[in-house]
Length: 85
Image (cartoon, rainbow, N blue to C red; front, side, top):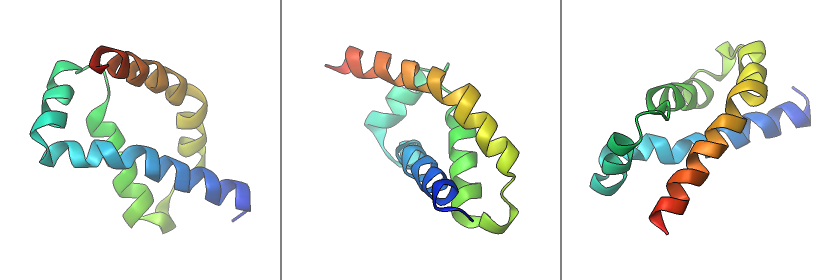
């Protein structure tokens, strides 16, 4: 794997980690319930695949997520952060 690809995968794992911990936190659980437009389950699923099934990663899907889904997710998270501050 190229260094760029490895970096991309690591960044996606790190981005998805807080959503994984949402299940175990009352405060973050409330955020999850208040913002159902955020694809929390899909984020957790991506994290699980990247973390545990790294030999089965479909790079086309990963790149599609990076190009298509991350900009909207960034926007949604910015809205949540603004509401919290």
